[in-house]
Image (cartoon, rainbow, N blue to C red; front, side, top):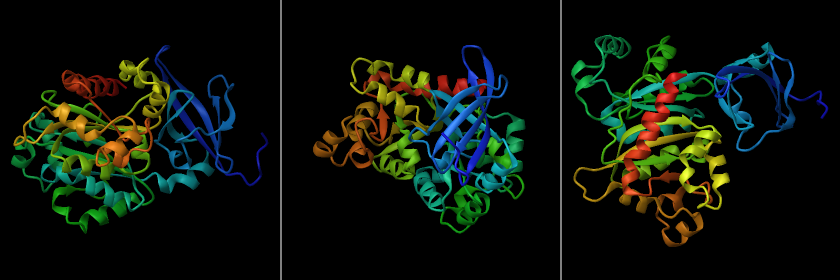
Length: 365
């Protein structure tokens, strides 16, 4: 395929960790914007790794910015840097990242907070719940420096989680700060001081920070990549909370195909569209939630949430359970908005998989 002289070409340095050789491999990844094609060369051997080919869905131009993680050829690639000055000049303004911290008093408002910020064309790129009541003195001191208005008692006494959220977009630092300061949520949302944006993000979204998951009397909910890509996370979370469930832990993950297949292994040979399901689960970022019931409500949380989720088949959900989560937010049997735990005894097991196993793997890299 010949290059068009008017084609906009973006070049990146991409990294992929090979689990078999235990080596970090680097590539020159070139994205042809006008034709929506991509190609890759191995930076060490200089050999062509991927011939120029059409960009597979659901990837699009918005995925190509420094820091993004994309999946090509079943490999999870991180775009660690721009490969030339021209790409840097075109995209640098789009890579601004702004992280905020939502206090426990506003945990139930995270859906509305995300909706309002994403309206400013800032995409949610990370989220994690955290607490500080078991933190070290050094940790507490750093928190107090980053949150000068926070009272120590408020920081350490709450059993409900804080939630850190990170957004990326053009001028996101200024736009998110202005939105928070002018919103009804301003007293329950902390922004970094000017000049501390990166330090704030690195501290509160650290991969080594322990989970808030209780791993008892809980069920797992996984908000699928198509919901994150369509910027519907806020609406889905609002719907879940309105049904009487409580979020005790939340974290964003990016699964490669091998990990997605591992998690979904129980459906192999049972679910007709198993391969497509693995593809969807590894197509982009997903968000895992540990859910509990309100203490004033009785019933088994796994069974209750499964009933609220609705049938796997989107068309069946729409016909028989039109008010279920999958009927309201799903698009097909594979892209059906959420995964939920099926069997009561698996509630803790599935939460452990995300908040202990996968979170632990993230902390190793």
